[in-house]
Amino acid sequence: RDLAKNIEIKVGIFDLLSPINYEEQLAEISIEEVWGIGNKMSSWLRSKGVNTAKQLRDMPSNELKSKYGVVGIRLQHELRGEACFPFKEHSTKKKETCVSRSFIRPATSIQELRQAIATYIVKASEKLRNQGQKARTIKVFARTSLYHPEPYSKSVAINLEIASNNTTDLLAASLPLAEQIFKKNKAIVKAGVIMQNLETTEHLQGHLFLQLKEKVNKKREKLIVTIDQINSRYGNGSIDWAICGKNQPWTIRSVSIGRYSTTQIKNIPIAKA
Picture 1 (cartoon, rainbow, N blue to C red):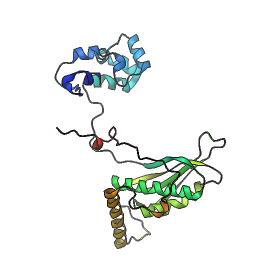
Picture 2 (tube, rainbow, N blue to C red; picture 1 turned 60 degrees about the vertical axis):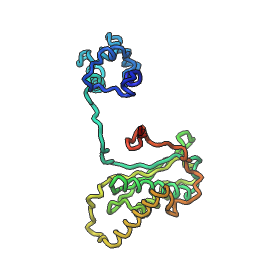
Picture 3 (cartoon, helix red, strand yellow; picture 1 turned 135 degrees about the horizontal axis):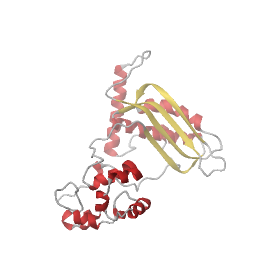
């Protein structure tokens, strides 16, 4: 990081795999400046006479491994130009999908909790469709503040007979669960839904005793696709489910949230010269 910032000809990039010799530069970087080394590790290294990135790279691996295990060896290998974490262009399939939020003010009625659960189900179903997955299990949860004199939390799950990412199916299955996690006189400050037992949309596991009506299912899927396309074109929430409500005083205001340029490569800013 230091070399990438300070060497002008590198324009913010320092490649350890380059054939150019960077022995002098590594020798000038103090051990505290190496990414991943904290105060305790740097103190231990200095006690061993390891003061620079170059010395860390060249120190005996068995001694480093005995103290810091795989973590220490990875740091050493990376300084040698070996990629310990290869770049992944495609993310692996998720095992769970969660949508949860803390409320801007506590929800005290079952109507508000149902609105919140419905809103999160809608968002979770959109995520599932974008991921090319369907859920077989839905889990909903709610809790009061952790600092409440008598804190309360509860979660309930339901298994679907056939995995789905259709918002209508997921709402129908999950909304009755809101009644089970709601408790009167308890101010709910956080709620959420977790989609579990995810399956790919490429293969659908049927049900022995349920007959799927292919024509009806295709119409329902086409409707959901149309809704997604409209929301994508005209903005999220252009078409919504009535159960979500328009007046949501409990919800967080997210108008100032920025793009995920540090975690999603598709959102990295592009400069054109």
